[in-house]
Length: 390
Image (cartoon, rainbow, N blue to C red; front, side):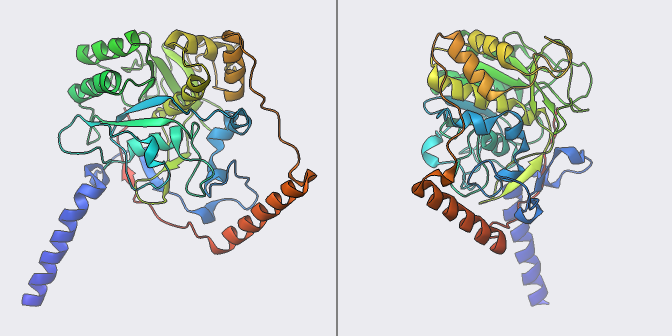
């Protein structure tokens, strides 16, 4: 009897310790399967899939291929010097795929100490923007040299408007961020959040937000506040997702359906969908341009997007795709033209076999790839976590 009692106490204690790690949303029921973070395993990668970087899961990053990142990275831009604040659920310190030197302390606006992510939403977004490239861990971020500021503005699936507003002010006034990513929203206009957004815009901060996942013409805020860049999502077929909002505030679209990014546990990568994960694509692009043109204002960035996005529907603007799909190489060229500079060289490098050094580099990478695929050394699991997308 004592043995059974001790085992029961041990089990209850273990559950009590695990709840803070998983977060309340891990135990939520009745949520859409499309809003889950589903663990990815390297053995699920097609044998013929080509990676876009020296990272084990980069072959899954169709979203970065769709916006031209392979070409854009050849410009040499990494987002170095740009500061992106992520007003979200925090950031996991255990991902192993974002250099700690590029993560500022951030701020917890919901009470408690630290910005540990118990949901996974903020960590997923941070990976899209700034996961370290070519470190043979996880994935590659759009701006792998960017500085990130995790602002914890909610600790559950529901948005805390007071915490969101406080987080925006902290990002602007305390951390002097260049770019603000908000992948949360609500159909309600909240004056205190609206005032915080205007404060950011007045300070010259580029504000990017998710257009929402109602699948209709509903306006969601803060994405629909004046001056904010509202982003809807497309799938691998570059068609607007069925859940994405469409209205006259949508500015651009970016990949957001079936995309991969960082999980909360060491070395893990997860799969999810939503306009929440299209918005950070645009934030990453803004960071790249800020590195080369730090004088770029929110209005400048809008004009550059207008001149460089790819039409996916009728020519020009429409309520479904806004100005079109973000294309990073074209955005870099458009920015250079806009600011009167010469565009960086993004031409393809020489064939790696054209010199002895290139040949041995190519041979080394081929050997590493073969060994990597034989042993599947990165086959780890992440805990599926569910979060409500508004």
